[in-house]
Length: 424
Image (cartoon, rainbow, N blue to C red):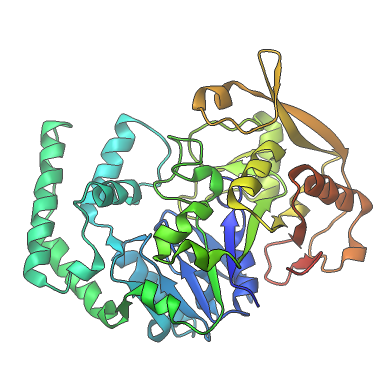
């Protein structure tokens, strides 16, 4: 079996968690390589929901080694809570966890900065401190997990950062802060003590692993800091571009991997930013309620719209996708007509490629192709022959437009509600 890369092909929340949970049982290692606790995966097993933010979804299979690679930023408090939650359900975690010594740590002062920045310039962040943690990383002020073992040096770095953020609070925002460097120091040491034996050189570990590896992307391609709808993006490379710097593996490592993209059968987005196919009013509410579209991490209602094939074709192209998974097909069961966006229109011009600039994308109007709905339940269907012909036609239209095969359909939130159209 080839190594596998699973990526979000939209603005996140595509259902990657379920897909990875289904597939990871066939792999020896599961890797998260970018993002932080701003990501959210929900997996339903035996009626029990697991909301994962940091750990790879493969953690739910006890034979799978789980890796948090260097491209991530990690809130240790959140990590320990996730480990505790899963182990309370009877699944052992800690002895098969491997954390890169190069992972940057998210601290309380990052969350404070997140709230201050969002107040000044709203972009819809989760307020988990992820953006500021990456700011500190690239500004060369970050603290990595490997820095904590030298307690004196760690305290010095921490104190410098707390004082730095305190100055920003007072001089820029005219506010006093309540950051307590000693409290942060003690809490971090306590958390580190629990995981310190699991901190390794992840690049070396992966290069010397004999088993098969599944790489699990977080968020989605259109939130990629370089290739997404900048500045309304996340702070990491959520596309395939994040693989090499997020894992420490050389580019040639991935040449034989299978790249699998995940997309909903419609489109959603959380937070601010352009969204050409967004549905307002009752139509948007209907899609939101049918799909239970509320954020795993924030609980915020997601913005909903028809499937944007211009954006999806762009995601296929820049990720080099070999196949697609289409999730939540059953959400469209009650729609008499189903629309897909096949182009944009602006000032009388037809646009077939996804624009790179925010101004153009925020002004375009979608050009729709209307397809007949199937008006039958697809919920829980697991055989191709049981799919309505109109649903099959919908899938074929998507495949032909984006020039990428749909290899799997998800027909409900349950673990077993899926069917293969063709195996990778």
